[in-house]
Length: 399
Ligand code: MLT
Image 1 (spheres, rainbow, N blue to C red):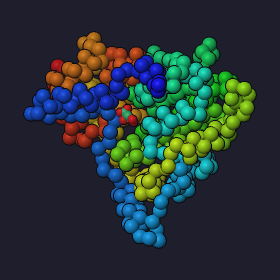
Image 2: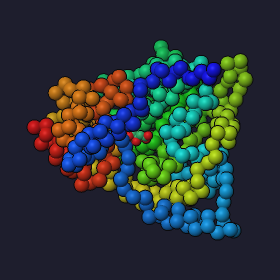
Image 3: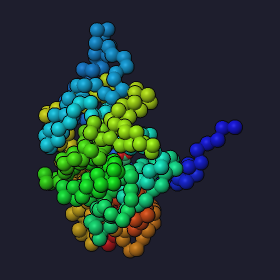
Image 4: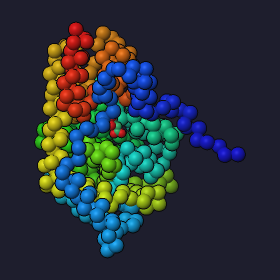
């Protein structure tokens, strides 16, 4: 008899964004005449940067020629991409070795897969609200999960509490969904807590490129000694428009060492390499050439133009919400506007209202955790035209 993983019984029936996609499809099928504006999942709409397309086109041609054809690549990524990332990190003051960077098909996969190298005996500390993958993947492992609340009282930035004992801590900065970003001083406190407790911080920097203030860290590794207690997960989805192209990376410093329950010391970098070489066969060469181009100085310049476009969308949205009197957060260091649902609506009630009355799709705050109830997330990744139209509908519809 094959028994299945009973921890799955503790999950919500479907993943947040799958659930929303299902509801929206049903509505669209029943109302084919309505123009739906999708500002739910954080999916980009700007095309890939020209230098990325050029590099990928060249790589496709190489794959069609005997002399330059490539089969399996290194599971942890090609050195040319590691080198590009080492240089990219240097631009914000972080020194990495190439073999501390592991290329993957995206931060979502790595967020889930990284659970492999930690014991199920750990207590996991998860912000609430936050990207639901951290919670769901640890529920799947049957781990003890505790939460730290983010709300207006702490600017949606929970801080360490010496009375709380956590072994693995997830931080997401700028935060998905709230857009709140930790300052250097706040991250120093988290690093101090992790070092004191021999904990490990899993730092999700997927939205680093949206940080609008140079004083706010774009990597946890700007903090002294963070390499002794943190792993950084990052995505090219939002930075370089790779949601469909699929590429991300995880930084596991060689200085990060922890013990097994019976006291044997292991280097997490080696564990992750062992995990990836066993369970993963690498990202396609063509995609990695595109990624290399995206992190070149020209690529960064071109990708920044797309980010500026989304930042302008966020500004338009905030300007719209200013007219409604609705309280909102985020939008400055983040492509998300996190707003309070009007008229005491729950977040799913507001979801239904927006979809049925205004044909706008957003993401209910409750999908990001219990503390997200009463809030709602809209993405600035839409087209300019749709963003303007959505805000007109909202401003008029909420009068
Ligand atoms: C989101 O909308 O929160 C993200 O796009 C989801 C993801 O990155 O997987």
